[in-house]
Structures are given as structure tokens and as C-alpha cells.
Image 1 (cartoon, helix red, strand yellow):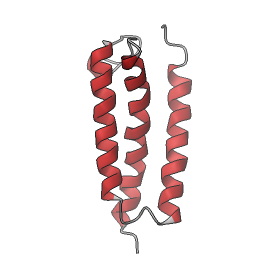
Image 2 (cartoon, helix red, strand yellow):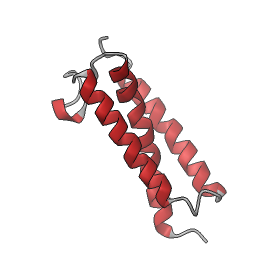
Image 3 (cartoon, helix red, strand yellow):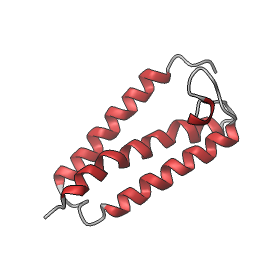
Length: 101
């Protein structure tokens, strides 16, 4: 039986995992990208800070998945993780698609 808090954690795990992608990729490509440290768009942050921010997001998302390790065999939890991950990825793509390069 899945604990009630696993459903709550499964909301936040994909948010952190997906949010780490644009920061880490932009940083490793040497591009600037907005982070919470500069107030968000249109202010841009350094590539080094983006790599760190993306890695921290992946670390937190991975720790949240680790908390869910006993429930990852449950189809409802897996479907929640996948659906929210894709939804947040599309949201980020739409939000940041017009940023200057």
C-alpha cells in the first residue's frame, strides 16, 4: 500500500528533475539563463551558476525519487511522475522559448 505522502512527493520530484535540464544544459553550453538569484526573466545569470543550479535541482529531485523507491512499482505513482514531468517540460518550453540567446 502506498503512503499518502508518496503522492505529494511525486508531484515535486519531476518538477526538480525537469527544471534542472535547461539550467544545466545552458550552463554547459556557456550560455546565460535566468535563475532565481537574479529575479527571473529577463535578467540572466552566469553559466557557472546555471550548472550549479541545475545540478542542485537534479540532486533534490533524485533525493525525492529515493524517498519514493518503495512506491516506484505502483502504476499510479509512475503515471503521476511521467504526466507531471511532461506537463512541466511543456510549460518551461513555452515560458522560456522567447528568451534571447
